[in-house]
Image (cartoon, rainbow, N blue to C red; front, top):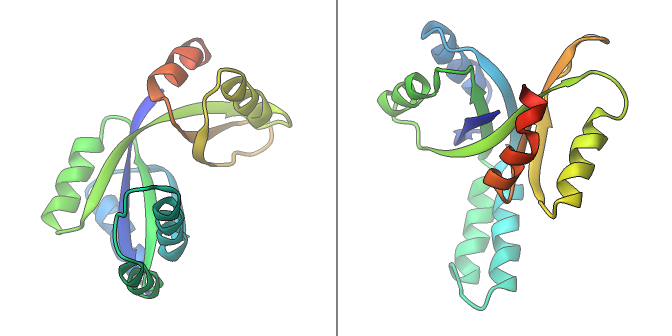
Length: 165
């Protein structure tokens, strides 16, 4: 249920995702879930946070420069197969990727209407915000894997402990 997600910036160019996924494949590391987004959106969120905070993280000129540069990168979040996080981190380190890790909640859900709603509603009722979510789709009647990044991982884990059992 609590799993470790890897986040990294990858050059936004043809073939880069192929290289990264080939490294995982050649090392026998399966990717259970992945999401990719333009990194400029991530930088824009940092800029918004800077505006709401009394504390400046960086100057406006720095953010403008980062926004332009970030279009050259994609933010990738990867959930390696259970039990392979250390192997994946070692691989990325050896290949000199810059990455971060974060605990997330990974839940298997039935592939039917309303399943995501139940989870999101439960988190909301408990006062837990969902920072982001992504998932995989299985054929109708199968299970889907959804990855949630809640603002309170420990509280969320307690709520869904019975869901995983």
